[in-house]
Length: 257
Image (cartoon, rainbow, N blue to C red; front, side, top):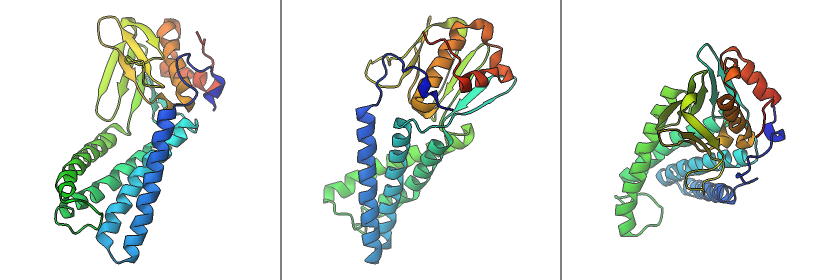
């Protein structure tokens, strides 16, 4: 299925220069780390090679995920049951996130333990040997928590649409709402700067914000229009529990207004 036939939400760019640049920088950093991991491995410095190899996997994993999403190379991973329709983050992107987080843990632990001892061959000043392990240690904690959350929740995120409302789940949060409390669904972030954002404006509560819509459907467009459709068409909400919502998404049968 290709949701690229659906119109781009008015306030979304065709591509995000910032995200593309981030993907390029992560990719460059990943290749650089991989090259030096190979060099240190040939020198017999297995410890430094292991640390750099882990960093390379992390950087290349995130870079590949960003590039695929920016190119619209995303497959819809969705299911339905008697509760509603659930859209998950693309399986390839989920795999890339998982591999990156798994690689971050052992390489990060090695960095934290051995850099202060001066046994890792990465050139650093004495101050950097003291300071950077704390930063990497924080990253390791986030990676572990993220992996636990992904295992518990079945991935880095999902969006559940039911006849009554919606549930937005990420690695570190869950936000819910009822359709009757929604007053608008917009294509802008509250700060007006984050691209590819969907903001669900609530009557008496802060907006429920979805970032990274492009991880769920190609270029994020299908996700935006399916949310707007079932918010504005109460008479169609039973489709969310009998599979017709997924058929509508596959056939792109949405009123785009």
